[in-house]
Length: 294
Length: 284
Image (cartoon, rainbow over all chains, first blue to last red; front, side, top):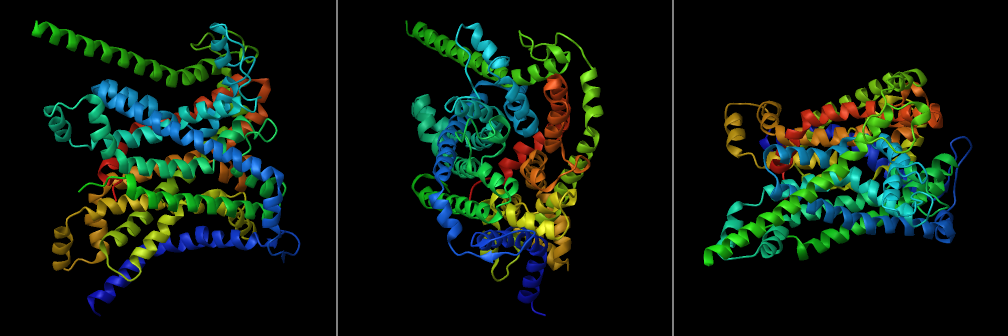
């Protein structure tokens, strides 16, 4: 048996478990979603092909525009917020603290990521309560009027953004922190010798050196925000009205509460295509701004 | 004169630094305050849950709320189910992801790059996109309301494979060549050289994956129906339903209890997290 052949066999055997699971549980279902979206499917009775009618419904569904609008709006506010706040916190903790203080801050900002989402979301729902909530009580202290956090179509976005920043900032924070720590100190030393100001050092060294981390964080944030589910599920249930209902929530309701698996699949497929396009676009655009160095 | 202005400059710098540090402390307190409020309120009497002023510090010590959690719902079995799923998934990730990563990093075989890209594209195929056919499949297999279904659906970790592969690619060829010269087979090289040398990446991918699946609410919501099979996140909604508006403090007692494992995971996992992310690297 020649080495090339035995290598190939070994290579396939090592990836076999993952590949089989991936085909059965991810690729297969993806194809399933595609097929379902062209059918009228029922678990109990017979199913039939219906061509494009689910997609026709999708484009004429008046709620669809609102729901996609909400989801995009979440992406547009959450992604920049997470990038900026995560970066500011990472730069601050890295630059302003030492030793056990650094450890303490790292824990403080990262721990909520680990905290069971359902649990803390339920607790935040209580904190956002208009009449009895912790947050409005503090707002009352400075004499301002109570804010209808979860009952106003505008404030729900602020509430979800606050919760999201509290719960998930640790993700971008920790990636930026690791990225910052991997920038060679010599670069800063050389820049100091050349008399570069802190601002110049940040924009000329820190940001370009962080750009691969930034790319990774942004790609993940967008994929995450596009499927945002837990936050509206626990805090707003999509309301008031449809004002914070997201595509993720709508897929769940359509397929699993109204048992319309086919229409749910059409919506899910549309979400997949959007995520795919945006991600591919980012990989194309990264050549323009991500600095991989040598 | 010159020294004086230099002194003033350093002083100004230090004062500015002090202000920034104070601001950082303030932000840190804001991040910590909700936990404090949850803890303090979990110890209040039911009728005082929402009494104003809110409790940032404990004003009562109603331990009974914590017993209420176990009396109203099978909270302990939520824990066990969550642990079962999380531990099996973590083990599966250590074994399967590292095997695949080794193959992609060190063995040449036809279609390697394509297969790797296909697996990585799994990052874009989100849970919501595959959930409906997965549900139909599991329903046909009579595997609804079964914790093993959750395990099964979590076994492939594309990001984990990517991170471990990055680290394995950075290991010098010389170890592998020496072992091959001595007649070692691939499995020996994988298990005795590659896995021990990739512990940071394996650890960090396991910690990240453990956290993701420990927090998962979406899949249990679809696949689990009964209290006895619920994992903790879904169990929290059961608790809210069972105790609910009658005793918010008891709900918060459940919240506090559900956070205990997270503290343990942080204590054990955090040192791997930074080390693993920096050595695994996010560079292409």
